[in-house]
Length: 477
Image (cartoon, rainbow, N blue to C red):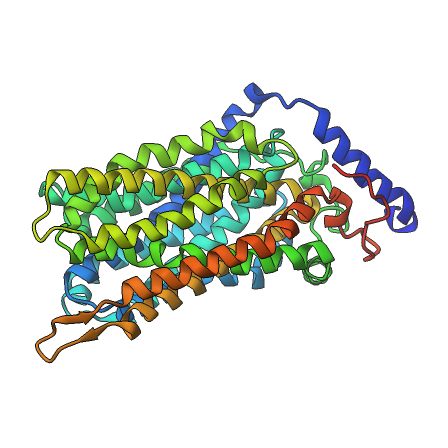
């Protein structure tokens, strides 16, 4: 067994990495899988987009930055999903399919949750019932996060061209978010559909697509073996063994360094990402106007991952993220000027300037996210792919979540108002400058560490079955 041949296992891991490097994948063969994964990631994006819509509605109804920061707690499941990812990876029905075991019931539950939400959403929004709204959306995020674990794991065994996993993720999730946020606001502004009806439509979408997947989609055998004929020792790995493997993965030197990068590298953009669009509403743009501008950005968010795919399909996918880092920091400084010099009445020229800013922001943020996901797909071990990808995604999400929540609250803390509620000191500017300073400091302190991580061999990211680190070869991949 591999457990008795530690040296051979380590060498095989490196050799396998070399084979993957030089073997040209058959993209035409992957097209049906790419389409399916994009649809699954699109479904995942719908609850996220609904939460984005609710933030805009809450702001319009008078919610403070601190209240919105509280609502943002609903996205915590994406930063906690590593706790139950090994269960999703190891507990399943071989006859039904390793990933479908979780995808199908979870997506049916999301459909039910959306329908329940449609019955109560108007009342909760009118009364600003933040606890109820946050609790319900927390549950919806929990389901979407679980679906993400299964989909990430499926992508690793479904595709020959691993780099396209990040493209499917970015395009699909962006499309889902766009439909549930931009799409809803556009329909609502023309009195075509109200929020309860839109939620019911999304529920129906989940029901139809999930039923089709359950009936017509069959999973490929894992690692060349038929799951239905494999023993529990072969494919239905013991849940506690997967947890033990994940603990070992976490203690790999490379993984610990990567987690430190993911936890901190979004500090520089956190104010722009969390508060800027809310500031647009404050200075005079209606949420419909912001929605129209976001609509024009949506094609970019879908096209950027495809356009940059050749930059991330090799062995240095994080180069794209580092190239985008400094320009994205400068956008944070530019946003301060954009808000400060905003006219009392929104003009055509200012609207054009805002749209140019949004184009640059969308391109850079999409490029960085796609670059990050491509690196995750490259280094993750397919044997525990769902949990490995989830571990990395968890810290990526956590790095975004804590920084955006902190900066949103900081805007309120640094804002000073008079007794008649007139703003005397706007905390947005101080928060933006602080975030930009931290971002520049991070870049110059951590860029060598990122370079080191990219140059590491795939064996440095693996734990062999005996539980010892598979780092015996220094061959750079």
